[in-house]
Image (cartoon, rainbow, N blue to C red; front, side):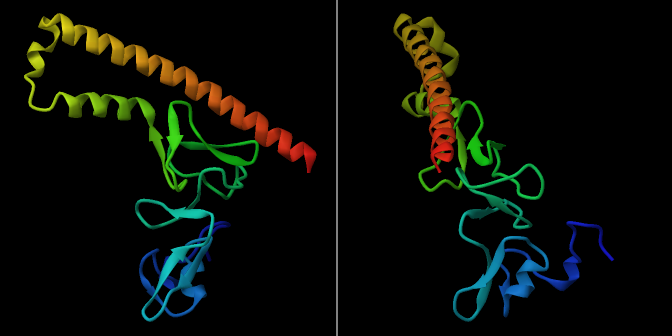
Length: 163
């Protein structure tokens, strides 16, 4: 017999695998369902997203969570019973990922400088200025993110008090 909150994986299937009934999925992965037309597949129920290894369904951004059984998606934490992206991370449009905003800024700079010999970047005054501007923009973006995160948490808290 398995410990509490653990399942005998021999009874069920992973997310994305073929299934015939919901029990095939839920016996292995909480918050999953057997959906679609033949062949049916194990998928996460609404409000959840599959972990990268297809072994768990994680709560999407802004989804209801607690600090016990339900886990938030990567780069997010359960804050005031909602999965919120961590500092310096922003949710994707569909809420299935929290992206590192600083990495995105640096990727944009890298794309703009594609084909440039990076070892010579700091020799040019214009390029040094570009790097300084990018770093300044990143700092502003971080400040805006912190403000937005704080604002979103206050709005959610206020909405809950109204209910």
